[in-house]
Image 1 (cartoon, rainbow, N blue to C red):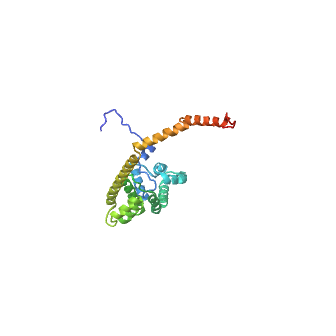
Image 2: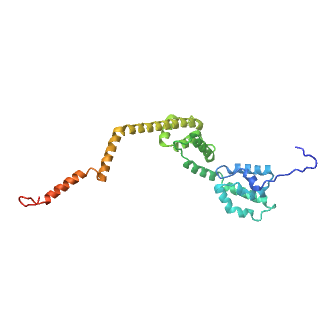
Image 3: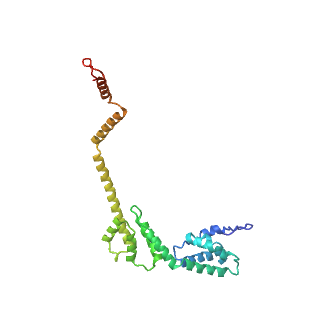
Length: 256
């Protein structure tokens, strides 16, 4: 947009922390080489060099990677200047590759895969998509059949049995598996709801009005006994009998 004579253009300078927030983050759960390419692309598009990349690296690292950088950061930042920035940045990239490279990523992905289970009531799509993301890190060439094996082994037993009986793992894709899983989950949830309704109905039939009346009558009787009501007659009768036994006979003089 052209400016009128006599006016000045103001350049807005954003702080480094705000700019770094827009950069792609790395937590060790994706290929490090791919992330490094994207990070350097962000640097180039914003006009930043290796020195800026090193100083602000802590703003784009997460989790275990952030802990790693905290432990070695001083080694790379101490005495950092324009003469050694390129060399130190290359050393950091090499160290990232060794520490969080393919083998490390595979081991972490296997652990995540073993911890990610599906529970009835959760969204099947979330479960399947998260698993597929993990599979890419475990083995980019993993077959569909192997993926389905991993998907099924972390299902509840009741669902896993039905899925094994209704699919051919060698012929369907993970997304076709997702459709089958949705149908199976919906069926089990409806059946569970129906069983709950039948159970509630049976309970109501057994605990009917007559039984409620019987329970109330028993409750009143026990409450009266506990409060002393209804015992007066028996108590007075026993008292009179006890008095008669203690008195002496007018004719023979014996007690009772």
